[in-house]
Image (tube, rainbow, N blue to C red; front, side, top):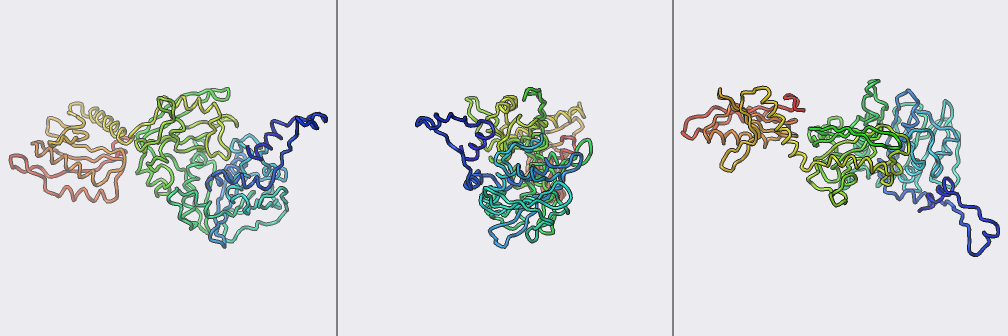
Length: 526
């Protein structure tokens, strides 16, 4: 246990006993006095927190400080430093602010969190974030006020005594834009660029320009706070508005939801903290087309990448996403060991929705960087989830389900038709997804894709058509049915239809090609 935790335990929960005078002097019993030194703050910085996790801590504090009944406003501002190996970052909000007592409490190690909002869960968060974002001994500054007038200002690096002064104006780094005027609290740090780059995925941690870094930041914020950023069903307004600025450029952070299709929804109840809590679990197949348009029309680069590090489900507690890409953390093999990540789970995604709960129920790690597995309530939740194991090869499984649903819909619409799936063609027994035939000569071929349709899929449909013609069967239409289509696919269709179709086995001409594209939404397959 480090100095910080020992001191907290000693002063807050487990006071060291006062020994009698003669016992204290006994050679068999001794007193140990716990002292905090500047080294403690360097230790705080060595926790492996990523840059976005430090910003999340500042954003959590800002949301918890929102004025009741008002929409929270948060600005995360980036600005260059004279040294290219550093940048300036600020988290500003327009909430209740802090008076001197609140500021003093916020800067304590392990102070009791104020209020009832579980976004202030641990009492270490602000110091943790400041230490990690600056490297432990770097520069930071806080301006805050609880009403009109002067700001309290306190500046780092950390020391055992921190001086607070009253100032009239904010002295911010050059080029820093807070978007709105008159904030109540501004937390500004000077971060090493090496720390800032941790919000990019490993292997991509090369970008240093602030515009590129801000794009990664928007993605992190949109995922973590999607519950606050989406429209409230009652007010039809988001609970919060978050912007990211770089100089004069301002980007409004959108809510970023799990891009999934062919979803299933399960509802169940778990007893947590002495009450029965309803949980909702939604899971399905990664929708790559949606993923590639997820962030203001652009592609997500950190989350939902169809890869081992990003496979699994998100956990949302109230409006805050507290964990992403959970797989082995939740599910176990039959022998009780954690389920290993494997490429067969790359397209498995989902979200567990937990309602807002009191602080202390379903605890998280400090700074909400993960769930606290020492909390037995999480075991109850995961035992309930065990009934719905992750889907292996979700893309293939999804296409099979899609095929069965489409066949059922065709049969319901045309009961007299002969609708079959996986119809063999060519000597190699290549299988057509669905064939819909009737006695009037209709013979429609369907190639179904759970995700985005690609040019190769259209050529595959042509191969099926040719195979049927060469076996003496005349198709009347070929349809590629997908969630969406790659660029220029629509332009390919008339070009493909203009190509010469093969002859029948007896040498007579067959009908021209008749291919078309259709989406799940158009066919009500969503």
